[in-house]
Amino acid sequence: MQAVIFAAGRGTRMGTLTKNKPKLLLEVLGIPVLEHNMEQLNGLVGEVILIVGYKGGMIQRHFGKSYKKLKITYAWQKKQLGTGNAAQQALPFLRDKCLFMNGDDLYSRGDIQRLLQRYPSILVAKAEHPERFAIVETRGEEIVGLVEKPEHPKGSLVSIGAYFLDPSIFHWSIQKSKRGEYEFTDYVRQWIKRRKLYFVVAKTWIPITFPESIREAERMLRKKT
Image 1: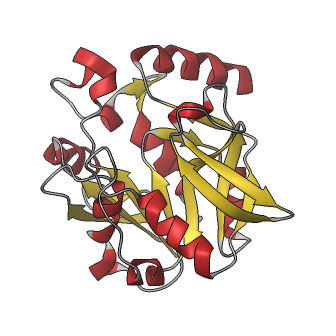
Image 2: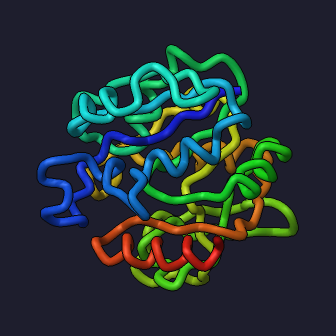
């Protein structure tokens, strides 16, 4: 099993914290954000494909070719063209069903395990500020709609950036969004139009979005230990 992690972004909403290092090397409880997720994946997948871009060399030097039981392969996104474009960089390395996930959201091992037990599926959770995320519309056990960062969201259940899919998702074409980027959620939307997509409700989800998110993440992780 492979996992693709989006790790190419500049993290502009983190302000000066990402001036000299990529967002995913910022530390939560003394451990880089990306390493938290690598730890959760260890033993669940055999290979992690890291899509790197902004200061990606620092990530490559930190992790090298492996992390514990995980083989690491690097794919480069040369221009910041969004998560849809980032995901395409992994395509030459993909073999079968795989996990796609954000590198700057903290997930639990248990939630990832449950996601990988149901194909095809995505992780969802209720968000305090749903307008910052992709709103999901559900019917029974399935996802029937997905709206990226709506100004006036109709609900609080959102996609949290972890998907168990397969490379055929790239068979469809997508266009740049209003933000001028290719969104991975547009690929997912194309999937929903043609195929079933199930959802798994996450028990733990900690998005690292703003500088204060790090303090909140540390508070939440301390409560779990």
